[in-house]
Image 1 (cartoon, each protein chain N blue to C red):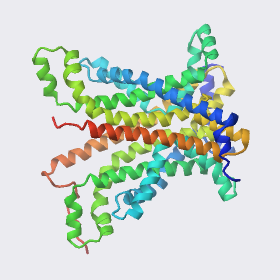
Image 2 (tube, rainbow over the protein chains, first blue to last red; image 1 turned 90 degrees about the vertical axis):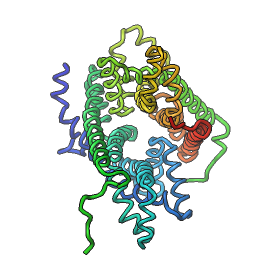
Image 3 (tube, each protein chain N blue to C red; image 1 turned 180 degrees about the vertical axis):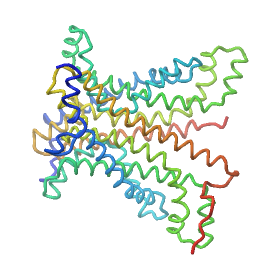
Image 4 (tube, one colour; image 1 turned 90 degrees about the horizontal axis):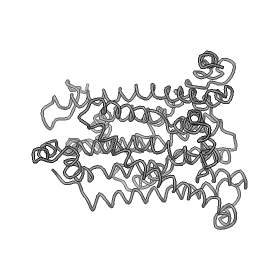
Length: 246
Length: 231
């Protein structure tokens, strides 16, 4: 089989797996899994990040420990735990997609928590002091003053986190999830004569996706730093027209 | 799930398997670290070189490696690359635990791409006038890097390099995919052999976590002993 014949035979399989006649797979599954994981991990990461900077020790310490444990173990370990222990706890066999999604959400949330923490802590202390002295509660300060500013600073990091998540979905390969790396291996076992070309195409696919997104993050970062620079020293990037509460 | 049976972790054939896995993981970490540090420095210097083509080559290297998952690297080096090698060399490789060699190649390239970026930003953190002053004093390009810029950059660079080492330690687990018999592989093997998943996974998790915390601690210690001086 020549290279072009291989591409011609397998490109649909590579992109969507056996989709209309079977489960979704390939590149589409990779993208779906990465987006779902990030969307679900965002609220959890936000919550954990807020706990990390919380003034109450009872909240801060367990979450800090959790973040340290998750960041100190390989994602593969988290995947294995989810794969072997979810069934024994819930009693139901969990599908590969759910297993991988769960592992990714837990793993990403721990990393997002650190991004959120850094975003909040990078704001000048005057912001929270001013908000508190204006009579806002701790949570009110967080919600109305700190988070809106921190989130905007975090945007490039979030896009980068999405890139990492796309790369992490490749570990679904190990538990037999039919994402794009797994499909590439399947194609390789069927074709057998073109391993170099098949794995180069796999690498190129990831590259196009991730490179595009990291360029986007880079652009966002530059736009944000330009906006910050145009303002007089000491003031934070905020909407030009302050919103007046009704 | 039955009771936690600690005895299979402390002695017997499974204990030895797990220990062997841990040792291979540590070897992967050590060898990769030794190989990727000089490679990363070389790439960082290329990215800062005054010649545009060298800069472009280094940039291409870094971007093309960082934007592809490590798993795809491993698959390529294990399944894809041998086809490009001459027959005799391939035979030799397959006889000498090729899984581990492919894992080291993939890990080295992946880690050095990340480390070179940290080194580059460390070097760039040293103000340009430092370089210009040393050039004006008659030092060559390489000499001013070696004697003036790099010693200052080291303090800025070591903390991110430590965290890359931590990433590398966690990444060694991905070598399981190509069948390198490191810790994760052995843990899965013990799991299938004994039908006890809890014990080997606890062993692996504790081992990964311990070394991770150790590396993190080392980074914190360095930062306390050698704080970045305001230049």
